[in-house]
Each structure stands twice: as structure tokens, then as C-alpha cells.
Image (cartoon, rainbow, N blue to C red; front, side, top):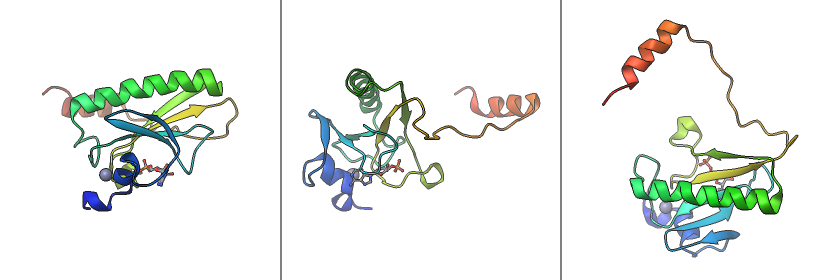
Length: 137
Ligand code: AMP
Ligand code: ZN
């Protein structure tokens, strides 16, 4: 997809009006328009990066620092009981908009949402084998 056709580029750079909760020279944080909970926010870099693989390391670090700031604000102002950070990459992982975004989702006791996964039960050998594939350089 071309950057010119990217809806999050247009939102992040102010070409499409949205509910902005935070903005600086690198990011715009907006309310998700299909929120999991009250205050569900998306951190959008103003530059177009499709996903985590394309995101420069310093931008990744700055996005987490901003998530921390917003999480504190959510606790203070919305009185949430917890926060999930969610970041999807690829259709298999549930990414629907191909412009990197970090979900900051305030959680409330009894909010009824299910953001966690169903745990599987690999054997110790299977875990060791995966560890062998993944560890190291
Ligand atoms: P993901 O599944 O991680 O790609 O998340 C995309 C998110 O963007 C979803 O939670 C949508 O509700 C949200 N979304 C899509 N379009 C808009 C929009 N125009 N304004 C605000 N949020 C949006
Ligand atoms: Zn984009």
C-alpha cells in the first residue's frame, strides 16, 4: 500500500480530524473509534512504518515512553485498575491497519474484555527445542 492511501498517515498528520489525546513532533495519540474499554488509545508515529519490523529502534523506545506517560494519565484521570499494551504485526496477529500503532488499553475490574490468550501445554523438550531455535544471535 502507498503511504498516500494510508488512513493512519492522514490521521497522524492532521489531515483527517480525530480525537487527539496527545501530540508532539513525532507522534499523535488518538482514541480508538472501536474501543475495547473507555479510554482505549492508539499511539501513531507521524512517519509511515508498516509495522514493528520497519520501526526504527529510537522510535520504538519513544513509543513505549509515551505509552508509559499515557498509562499514568489513564490511572490518574480515568481511574483504571490496569493497562494492557497491545501491538499487532501481520494479519496472523490481527493487524488490520498497516501503519504501526501501539494500543494502550485501560482496564477496569469487571470490564468484561478478554485480551489474554489460551495457554497451551508444551513438554519440557518442546520448550527446550524452541529455546534452541530462538536463543543467541
Ligand atoms: P489493529 O487490529 O491492531 O490493526 O488495530 C486497528 C485499530 O484501529 C482497531 O482497534 C480499530 O478500531 C482502530 N481504528 C481503525 N480506524 C480508525 C479510525 N479512523 N480512528 C480511530 N481508530 C481506528
Ligand atoms: Zn501510514
